[in-house]
Image 1 (cartoon, one colour):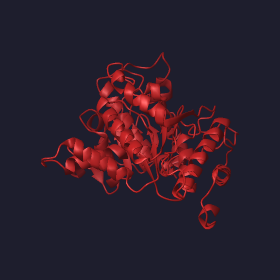
Image 2 (cartoon, rainbow, N blue to C red; image 1 turned 180 degrees about the vertical axis):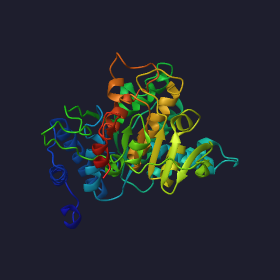
Image 3 (spheres, rainbow, N blue to C red; image 1 turned 30 degrees about the vertical axis):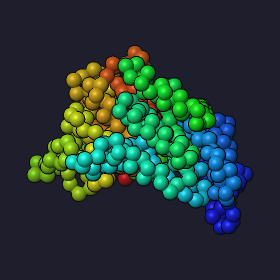
Length: 392
């Protein structure tokens, strides 16, 4: 990368050249919406460089909010920009942001200070010593999370730290629950005031396998994408199917109770593998912080007893599916190999069809379907020889 060796601050032309080269090295060409967003990011990068030189010190460069359908390369584009931009910077995923906030609050438990002070300290630490913060997978489904986001935006404005945000939602559709949306409207106004809103809406979902015979690229927007995509969706989960991939349910003696943060979870764990039922993992009160903590200790997850997303069931209640959505988000972002096992049908694309969609499905179903499309399917009708070859 020539920017680091050039001995000078990059301008917008330097940055866009590097992003285009990054795309070509990944085997694709920027689509028009991606190119427009890349140009805007590079303008921001140049503004930050000029600001570091002491010029425009009182002016905060406008932040950038990238949104659009799943798999359109928003995170890839932000990450490419992040790699090319030298200097003081930080990238954080939505879930990691809240994990840091909760850690700060728990660390202050029992102290006379209010939780609000602990949260403010966590936000201050996140923004400390950086000229730009890149925030991936921005979404708000809980009014409490919305309060944290509002505090982050206020503090970033006070510290004059610009943000780059990626989201599947345009600002007006954040916190879509009609019971709570009005509470977030003032924060939406702040987002629009401090950020340039850009939609990346190309025709290609880069997470989807290319059409047969096509050379269409699948650029990675996650460092652990290769590990995640080694996973499988297996139905109905016969011993022969599982054994073809070296999946043998841990013995009863390997059953243990884990407490990743505050909730107890019964699992079977051996070495780097976590084997857990859908009901145990998603049917209780586990939080994203729990899933993040478990991802630090186990690089391969097997979730069995997964109910069909197209069939209403007690196991697949709305809260359980939302937790499942959080699990997939975390494992995708953390680069964890995921095996899903159930009687089937386990088809999240079909679940998006209004004729098959259930009332319990999470609002982020499209994103989850896109991510799970990276996992090969192993079904009862698949010849064993093909299954065995797929696991090699």
